[in-house]
View 1 (spheres, rainbow, N blue to C red):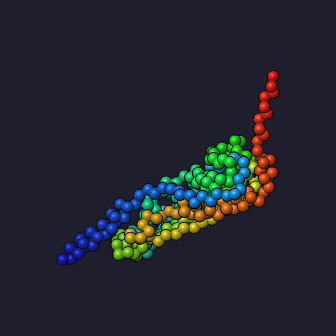
View 2: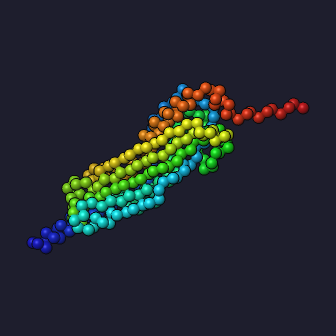
View 3: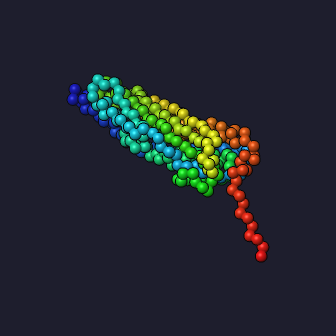
Length: 254
C-alpha cells in the first residue's frame, strides 16, 4: 500500500510538471495599436521614425534552479534584456527585437492619427528624406519573476495542481521619445513612457502571461501621441511650412 501511495504521488507530480513544461513555449512580440483618433491638426511634413536606440543594462541573472532545493520557499530571476534570456516563469523565451519592434509600433500609432503627411521607419540617423525625426531611446525593459515551490523542493509543483500560484512575473518599460527638426537637429518635443506590468500566474489562471510589453507600450503611446498632437497644434502653421523643402524650379522655356 505504501509503495502504491508513493507511486501515486510521483505520478501526480510528474503529470503536473509535464503539463507545465508542455505548455511553456517561445512567446513573441505582437502589437495591436490603439483605436485611431484622427486629429484636426495636420502638417504637410514627413516624419521618419528611427530604430530606437538601446541604452538598457546587459545583466541577466537566472536562479530558478534554486527551487529544486528543499525548504526553499521561492526562487527568482531578473533579466535586463529579456529578448536575450532563456527560462521565464511559464515561457521558454521571448521573441522581441526592441529597437525595430518599438519603432514600427510607434510609427503605426502616429501614422493612423494622420498628424503628418507621411510617416515611415528608417535605420538611418537623421534621414535626409524627412523634415522631422522621431527618436526613441530604450532605457529599461526589465523582467523580474518569482517561482513558488512552497518549501517542497522538487515536489514544489504539487500545490499548483490545487490552484496555488506558480509565481509572479513583473515587467518594466521605460523609454524616451524626442521629435527633432532634421535640418538642424533641434529637439522640438519630448515625452517619456514609464509603465509597469505584474501578473500572478497559475495553471488555471493567467497562465503563460509572462510578458506585457505590447500592452505597456500601447498605453504609453496613447498618452505620448496625445501630447505630440497638442504640441503640433500649439505651433502656428507657418512654423511647420518653413520646414517644407523648396519646390524645384521650373525649367525655363527655350
